[in-house]
Length: 100
Image 1 (cartoon, rainbow, N blue to C red):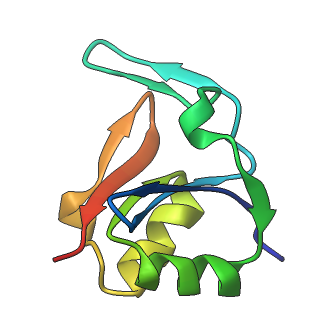
Image 2: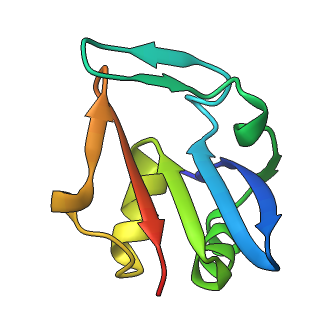
């Protein structure tokens, strides 16, 4: 099964800030007692990309916001995050990564 992601690329002081979410959760809002995850916000508005492109972009980014099971798995597979770094809002996993 081919995985599809929605990727938004932002820049701050010349550094790539990447927002990656699974296409299946993009545009939705998730909320629980502790937090809100709004994937309909402008920050997450981007273009559909495949797994190979997402991997390349994640490795180039200064900051990565990965949301959804597949997006988080890619970040973990690349060694940018661990399962212990992952949080969830209403059962949707997400992780924020700052590459030093």
